[in-house]
Image (cartoon, rainbow, N blue to C red; front, side):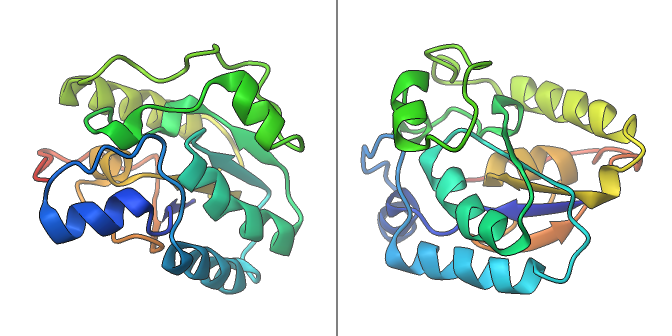
Length: 184
């Protein structure tokens, strides 16, 4: 499967410059983030992708949109692959507002408030990653899956820090990382 970290968000832009939470709730992509999403769509066009799993955060949905349009596969929204709730950007948008903003996606299975209270312990993200790993490993076609997700979730799955807009191949049948460096 392929893990794709969402493109640069307004939060990422400000946090990288200051190392302080700028207080942006459910941050949208910057222009660079949209460029990264379009580049990912071009790069992924030749891959055998049968499904796209995406986090319900706006930045992930925006990143998935050009990819889904380019390869013509369904987008499945799942909070299982969301970011670790640690900053203001990890406060999500309520389900009904997401459904209004993204009428082509199914949000009916989400709770109205689908993100966890803050802060979310690192152990909870690792538990979520392990659940995701097991669910995906049980699917015969896991290798045809694209997951549009976040830094913290990718870190919990792989132990690797992935930059905005970058991809990483992932085998859910492989052993989980022994340690996870949670530096932010």
